[in-house]
Every structure is written in structure tokens, then in C-alpha cells.
Image 1 (tube, rainbow, N blue to C red):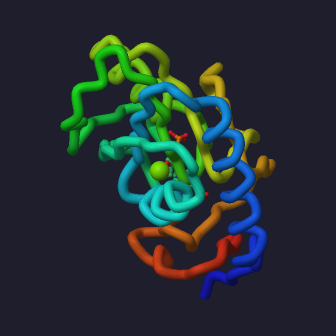
Image 2: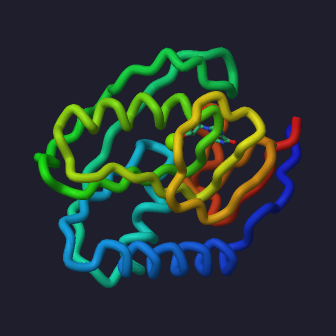
Image 3: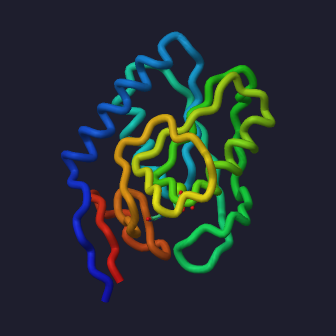
Length: 172
Ligand code: IMP
Ligand code: MG
């Protein structure tokens, strides 16, 4: 059985989310911000993030499927849900649970730029840098970690553990 090692407690996640929401609210004041959550992993983080913002935003989602073996992204990415909102001339903030190789994000940014947004930036709860393969810029990272497979708070392993309110390192 894999072991679940606690990494971030509820209160820590709450503080990190509130803090990044303050920065985003200040940076985008008076702008037209569209948050684009990356399904499925980002659904809980996005839901908590919007409730800490003090500016109006629009919310949309994409779903990116990557075909790789096991827990590493292959870079062979397909969108199984595209955006619905017209983002032309808008400020877009991609909201991710965790950035690993960066390949998904690179693909998504290229996709979003085709719709002529004013800006495209990235906010992630966790920035896991050890396996980064792409030079993608993460504008808002709540917490950086070196490595390890994380679950809980929306993040899964084979669709399990998403419902856990705290974040754990899944150790095999
Ligand atoms: P990347 O393309 O390698 O950056 O991977 C991005 C996606 O893979 C994330 O949005 C997650 O959905 C998933 N992923 C990467 N690392 C983890 C992890 O440690 N736990 C759960 N999902 C992960
Ligand atoms: Mg994700």
C-alpha cells in the first residue's frame, strides 16, 4: 500500500490561497480578468481562490489530457474541453493545481494566445520544479516543491484522493 505523508495542512493551504488572491486582486484591479481553471485537478483550488478575490472575474475551464505512462506527462497533449468565453482583449490567468514538466502549461498558453487575449499568466498552487522540461514562466506559485507525487485538494492518483482536504505526498 502507498503511504500518505502530510505536506500541507488546511490552514497552510488557506493562508497561501488568501495571500496569492491578495496579490492577484491588486495586480488586476480595474482590468478584465478571466480565470481559466485546468480540469480536473484545479477545481478545488480555483473554487477557494475566487472566494478570496476582491475584484470581479469571469471563470472558465479547459481540460487537458496528456498521454504518457504513469505519472509523467508525455507532452502529447489533447484538449478534451475548450474555453467557452471570448477572451479577446481580456487578461487571462491559467489556474493549475501543480506544474511539473511544464509541457501541459506550454501547450495551454499557446492554445489561449490564439484567441488574442491581452495577457496570459499562470497561477499554480504547487510548482514542482525537478522535472521541468519547458521554460514556461509561472507568475504566481503559492508553494514550490522539489519533487514527489502529490495528492489531495483536487489532485489525484488514478482518479483517487481528490476529495482529501489536505495535501499529501503519495509514497510508493
Ligand atoms: P506537466 O505537464 O508535467 O507540467 O503536468 C501537469 C499536470 O500533471 C498537472 O496539472 C497535474 O494534473 C498532473 N500532475 C503533475 N504532477 C502531479 C502530482 O504530483 N500529483 C498529481 N497530479 C500531478
Ligand atoms: Mg492539473
